[in-house]
Picture 1 (cartoon, rainbow, N blue to C red):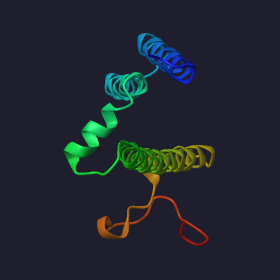
Picture 2: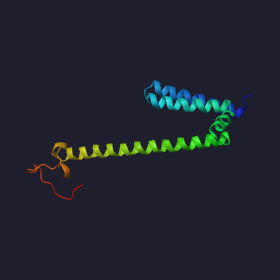
Picture 3: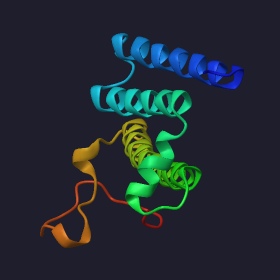
Length: 136
C-alpha cells in the first residue's frame, strides 16, 4: 500500500525523469548524463515504491541497514559530483585565461605568433618585438 509521502516522492521522481528526458530531446544534455540521471531517478522511484529493497541489497553487500546503504551511496554520489564540478571549473578557468590572453594580445596589436617562446623552446635569433616590464 502506497502512503501519501510515497505518492508525493514518486510524483516528484516522475516529474524529474520527464524534465531529464525533455532536456535530452532538446540537446541540452548528452547521452551519458541522460543515462546517469535516468538511472538515478528510476532507482529513487523504485526505492520509494519498495522501501525494503534497500535492506535486501544492504544485507547482500554486508551493510547493516538499508538506510545506511542509501547514506553511503548518497555521500559517494555527492563527492563524485563535487569532483566533477571542480574539474569543470578548472577547465573553464584555463579556457578563460586563454581567451583573455588572446584578446589582450590582439588589442595590443600582437597575435599569438608573436609571443615569446617558452624557456624550453627558445630558438636562437632576434626577437621581432621588444618586451618591457616583468614576465607574466
